[in-house]
Length: 268
Image 1: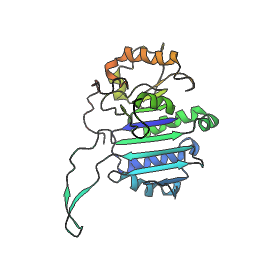
Image 2: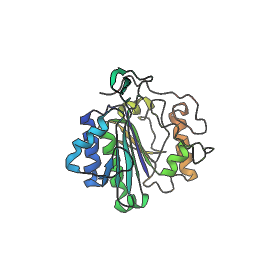
Image 3: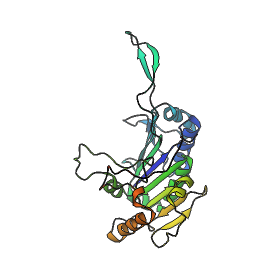
Image 4: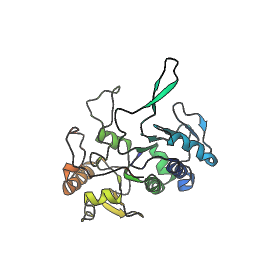
């Protein structure tokens, strides 16, 4: 199973500490890492009392916090700081002499958080605990969009089936361009939910819950088992038609231009 979170909130040190603290303590330590690191291989023991040190990795330009729980792993994931790395012009001895401007600006959704976990483990510890933790992670990262679904569902909706195993790439997972599809659990910020029109009647197709900050969760059934059955896929299709297909990414038309919110500037 997979959680994906997308936030415009810059990963300053305080935000980085908050996210790592939720990962460590949320759900009574449900996904607390055993090991962490800035790159592979992940070897550093995770110390929940020294979150500030891990936050320095993540808050650095182009920083990462990679984590793993269990052996074999029950949970793996990465928090990505997609800000531009520092670039320097150097003299002949390699000494930096002038800071250079990047050719391209960083993406709008600069804060990206992934968590992948074994479905048997998720069912054994209680699926609702995982859902509650996903909501807590969504709130801690100030995300505009989040999803919780099976890896098979995520892949089917974002990987071109014509790609080979050596060239797999995900498409459509950028809320700046439109809605990244519908999944078992879908989390929307107040701003995103308002633009999408989630206040209209939807209960004939999907379960809706208002989150503590006014955002919205859409949920297709109690369990992700059978989520890709034809009747569930048809409910998703009907909901997309009701909300506006021009707003949703569709892997069958990966280069189609979508309607998207006027996101404005990055969240502070």
